[in-house]
Image (cartoon, rainbow, N blue to C red):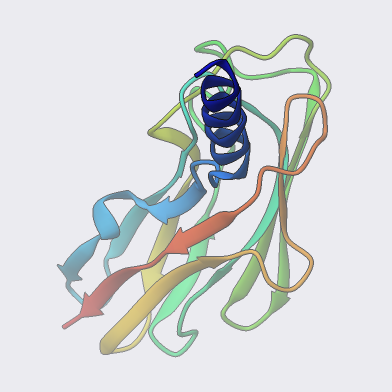
Length: 168
C-alpha cells in the first residue's frame, strides 16, 4: 500500500505541474459593441486579465482597426496603472506603425509591483469616427508583442479578445 501511495502522489504531482497555467488575456472591455454617430468619438478600454496574484511589469501589443472608419484621437496611459496612481518609474509609448495599427509599449521599473489580477486597465483609447461602417478593434501580440511579469518573465499563454464599433 505504501508503494501505491507513493506512485499516486507522484502522479498527482506530475499532473499538477503539467496542468496549463491560466492564460493572461488582453481584451477590449466587455468586448465592446457600440454604435456611434459619424463625426463623434468612441472610447474603449484595453483591459488585462491575469491569474490571481500575478502582475505585469511590461507589455507591448498592437491595436488594429479599420482606418477608413476610425482614427486614433488619444491613448493616454492607464488611469490607475500601478498602485492606484501613475507609475512614474515607467516608460509608456504609443506609436503609429501603419494606418489602422498602433503599438502600445510599457516598461515599469517599479519594484515590487502590486498584484493586479483581473480587470486591470492598460489604456483607454479614444477614436474619432471618420467614415460609416463597422470596425473591429483588435488587440494582438503579433508580431513581436509580449506580456511580462514583474520580474520580466513572459506571461504565457496570452490570448486577446476584440471589440467592435459601428459608425452610423
